[in-house]
Length: 244
Image (cartoon, rainbow, N blue to C red; front, side, top):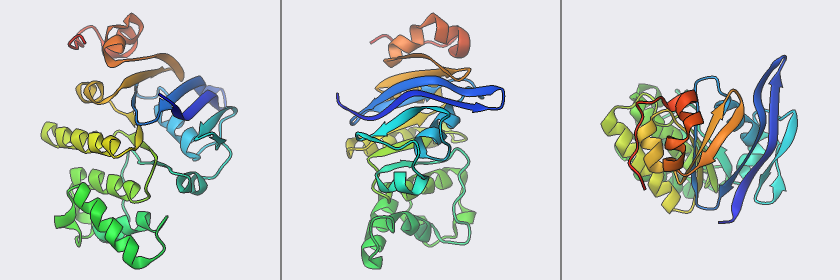
């Protein structure tokens, strides 16, 4: 599998704290790579380095053969690498449809094209019934879908999802997992930070474990679930996964 995204020896320090410590990983074309680890492990900081919100103190980020770690986020998004955020913040003064139009305008300056594309993303994420509602009035589950629809409207090639399942009920979470699988089936490669272990293990082709800013382990879900270092640092002895 060819890589579309490479993180090479990425390091980020905040004073005396090393939040990301010499992390290297590859995201394959059409792959879902899960990122797990305790709170404060450096997962979201890693996303910030990849998406351009922060610059690494050391290392590089290569997207589709081009170094991007010094580019601003809007140029990175324009190249097709887009992220969502753990705390969803829609444009509260706009409707659901208008929020998604914001994403669609990245590649479609023509309003009619943007409208059509935004509607297709609302349909894909199940938000058509809420299209004309103010975004501030949505439930958490619908705000998560709106965050996803707005990102998808930019036509990403790589999508970074930061805890898209957090706060959802089991039923809502299962529905979101199917949406994420459909995104990958459409040709998008995904990096997914998640704490819902059953979901991320079932969803991911591989799992990377971040602990104290370092890459502790990376491999297939069944391998990660049995890794003694991962069990001790994060999963706990009670976590079980069916064998391959």
